[in-house]
Image (cartoon, rainbow, N blue to C red; front, side, top):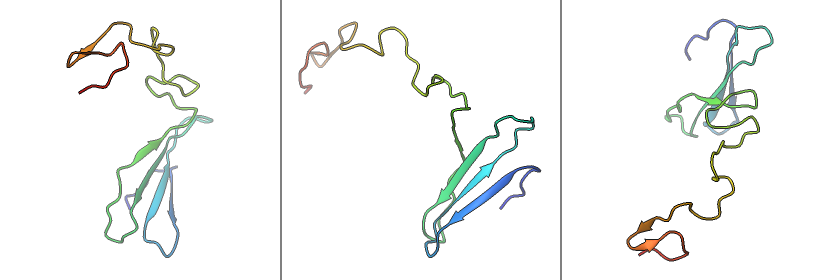
Length: 103
């Protein structure tokens, strides 16, 4: 495993007898009381399996583009309450404003 930067922690999770395992990397924010990022990676249950890429674990403290503070996707216009398209669209001669099977 690569050398970790100062003030960072990495935990390996493995349940014998399976060879699969996962790792959690807890970063360091550098600011007292600030939220530190957490990353995860894993590999299948064979000794020759490659590790996955590191992926960040998002929490309620993270800001994710396009997602509001409640964890919902931000929408604009009538997207959140629409029951039909605002403007009709046609595919293969079938209007998407009515319920029909596309062929």
